[in-house]
Amino acid sequence: MFRTQPAQNSTEFKSDFLIRSTFGVSLVSSLLLFPLCINSFIDGRNFDGAFGLFTCCLFVINAIACHRGRYFYWLNIVGVVPAFILGSANGLFSLGVMGSYWPALCLFGIYFILPFKVAKFVNVIFLIIIFAAAYHTLENEMFFRFIVSLTAVSFFIFLSMKEVTYSQNVLKKQAMTDPLTGALNRVDLPQSLQNAIDECKKYQTDATLCVLDIDHFKRINDEYGHDMGDKVLVDLSKHIQSLISSKDTLFRVGGEEFVILMRNTSLLEGKLTADALRDTIKSLNMLENKVITVSIGVTQLKPEYTWKQWMKQSDEKLYFAKEEGRDRIVA
Image (cartoon, rainbow, N blue to C red; front, top):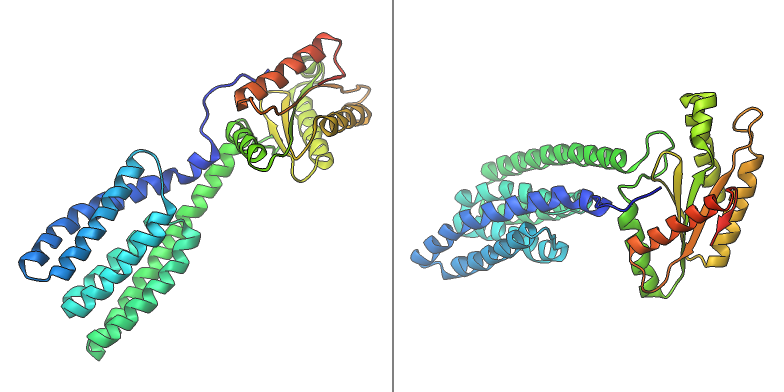
């Protein structure tokens, strides 16, 4: 049966790279920017120095947050990104050609501190503003060289981050999906249960959990072989997914054990679904001359439950269903 244990959830998996990359960009940027701010004050460019110090503070806050494992999207999109844009534009206006080196670095920063889907649109806005600033500050030949080189840098960064994002999505899918049945595995279960609990508290809705186990599955493997046992698991998973609602989520959490998370579902509705599954599974011709039965534990979420308590209650009810003779549900 399922036993609760710490697991990396999908949100953590998804944001781990972004947290690390944002931390790196913020830390390095703050260390590089601070001496430049001091130099601006020494040269009498007080506005540049003050703006640089403000931006440096944003980087420090960002680095501290990421070091603690937190990512603040709005701090980056409303604070850091505008600082990149204004700082690059101001560098072009105040330094001319000498200020044309910074936009490329800022482009890298944008892609490493924002989700890719957002970064690619912010990148376009950044280029439009910087090209406008360059048009008013650089000579024609230098302006042409600048826009060609910066566009090329932007394109190469886009292609690189597109491949990185694709690889991350593939790895995430592999980490969370059971390769045999295509159902989600136990990696994402804790976070999914916690999300369901949070939604129920916020919107005052119901949620029900079903833990389903194939009866005497070991005998099936012993009598028919593991290949046929795998076929039963695949057929069963397909059948469950064909019957449950689109708002429900199927997990395979053990050899022959499945969990169905039913959102916006009362205990009565959950029992009816579980009973329909139990009844129709018996009629499936998954093995020749062999009727496959399942036992199911059904538990409605209570306000005081943690995700572990919710899972434990369902697990215990599954145990009772097996103790009482199998091929039944206990709710």
